Image 1 (cartoon, helix red, strand yellow):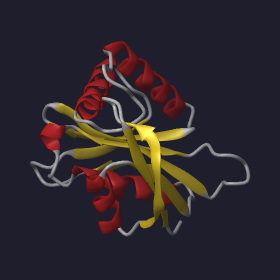
Image 2 (cartoon, one colour; image 1 turned 30 degrees about the vertical axis):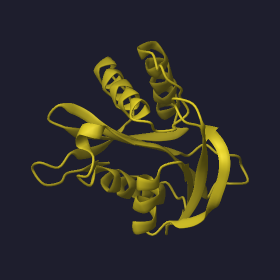
Image 3 (cartoon, one colour; image 1 turned 180 degrees about the horizontal axis):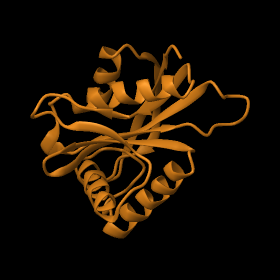
Image 4 (cartoon, helix red, strand yellow; image 1 turned 90 degrees about the vertical axis):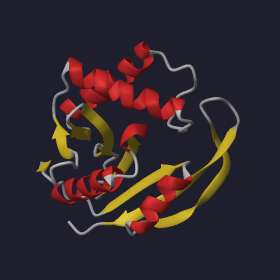
Length: 179
């Protein structure tokens, strides 16, 4: 799956295998998001080693088909990413989970999050999924999901920690996608 867009818009593509250079780019995007205050499972300080270890696990999961790893790239490398978790329990073959929509701060407000989400939804359809779920702790992400037609279920206060400490709420969304 490759999505080609206008000249200055990043290209979105599926990574079945991940090179060392791509691991570095992905770790950089993750570190930038965490340093910017995103509650995405990591606390500050996020070391390069922890970021690389996370992406190695994701790469292994993508290689085994348990998840799909999509990236948005510009002329400088990877600037955004999202995952679709495909390997769910046997009583949920119709469902996927969208995880870790991350966009580097230097590339925000350019429609990259929307491009990645469109690609994730299309990939889910192609893989026979009819229901997607996700959770987020960011107001900007909530607005994006709502604009894209996702249904907000509600928020749980104090669900997770912010990277610098302090509790934050997490909001859950779902979207039905036609296979």
